[in-house]
Image 1: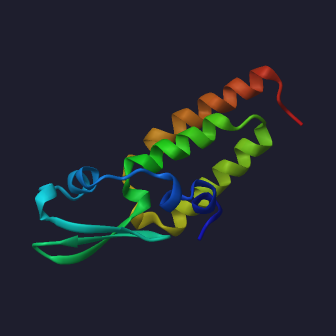
Image 2: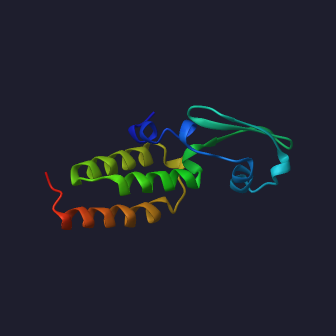
Length: 123
């Protein structure tokens, strides 16, 4: 488990519905029998295939939670450390991230960096 995963703790903090999972899997929600939220993955019992694992990192809530963490940083060193955690997680679990993840996260991080720099929140 990476620092970013520990920081977000998706199994306990994310509210995930069957409809969200069905939309992610591009199937009807009626094909989902049961969903189990494990510490590191979601296990979906499907009528048509059996079981299927889904990474929390594939959810849009993951992106939003990371963006929220970025916006909550109050110092440049904390923001740099968070970016290091994001990059480490992305490289280690690259298959679990969507292609547009960096396009979503980078502008938010850069805006927060500029805001903190202008405020003079340098140690």
